[in-house]
Length: 439
Image (cartoon, rainbow, N blue to C red):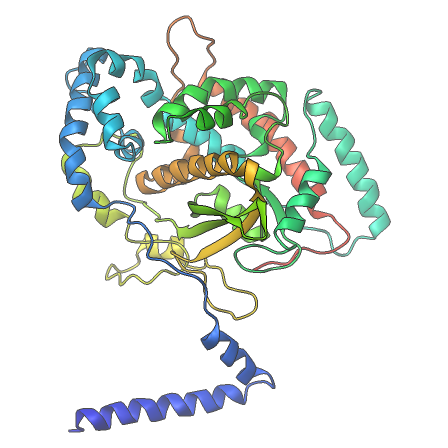
C-alpha cells in the first residue's frame, strides 16, 4: 500500500501529465490556462437566501401575523401560500411588528399580501424574453424590409404603445463599456431592470399603478421619500422607466435567464468617484437562484415546513456545486446547462461575484430601488417555486370600491397583446447588422 506522500506525488504527476497533454491541444492552450488561473473576480460571501437560524427571531411575529389574518378573513384555518410566506419572511422585523402584528394595520395590508403572487406573475411575464433567431441566410435588404413591415404591425397592436429611447440606450451602453457587465461579452443587450412593458402603454401604466402600494408594502423597501418617488415613476407616465438608472448591459443569454428568475442582482453599495463626485461606482453581487420543483407556490405553507423548504432549494442554476444522491433528479436536470463564464478567462460566474457599473450620483436612489424590487421579487419567486409557474400565482385582489380587473383579463392581454408585441419586437431588435454573441 502506498504511503500518503506517495499518493500525493502520484496525483501531482498525473495532473502534470494531463496539463502537458492539454497544452498540446492547440497553440494558445497555455495562454488560456494562464488566464484562467490568474483571473481574479471581486467576490464576497453571498447572503444565505433562507437563513433558518437568523429567521428564528421572526417566527413568533409571523405566527401572530398569520393569526390576525385569519381573524380579518374570518377563516380560522387560513394559512399563507408558499409565495406569500416568502414575501412575509423577507420583511424586516420592525415592519412585521408595527404593521403585521398590529390589528388595524394588518387589516389594511391584507390585499397587498394577496397580490404578491399576481405581482410576481406580472413582473416575470413582462420580463421574460421571447427569443427569436436571426435568419442569417437572408439578405440585409430583405431583413430591413421585414423590420419596417413588422414595426408598422407593432404600432397597430396598441396605438398608445411607445418605443424605447435610443439616446438612453446608447448612453447606458457607453457607461457599461459596450460589453455585458457580467461576462464581458461584446454586443450586449441593453436591458431594463424593471421591465419596460410596465409602462410602455396607457393600459400597462394603469395596471402597474394598481400594484404600487403592494410594491411599497411587501418588498421590504426603505420607507422613505426616495423609495416613494422611485415607485411613483413606475406608473408616472408612459416611458418613465426608459432611463439609464433602469438599464444595464447583459449578454442575450443572461437577459433571457434573468426574466426566468434563474439569477438576480443584489445591491451592495454606491461610492462617488474620487475624481468626479457627479458619478458613482455601484457594486452589484451576482446570485444564481435555486430551482424548487417540489414546492407548490400556491399551496398552504406552514411554519413547520421551513426545514423542508431549506432542503428544496439546494439545487441552483449556474453549475453551483451540490452533491445530489438522488437518481434521475429532475432538479439536477433542470439546472444543468445554465451557466455563464468570463469571456476573457473562461472562469465561471459564481454566486457572490461582484460587478460594477457607473451611474450618475443623482440617479443612485432610483437605480437602487429598481434593483431592490428585482431582488425581492426574484428571490421570493425562486424559493417558493413560483418562478416555474408564473401564470399560476393567483388572482388579483383590491379593496372594495377600487378599480378592478380580473386575472384572466391581464392574462389575455399578456398573451394576446404583450406576447405578440414581444415576439415581433424581439425579432426586430435582434435583426441588427451585427450578429449577437452568445455566452
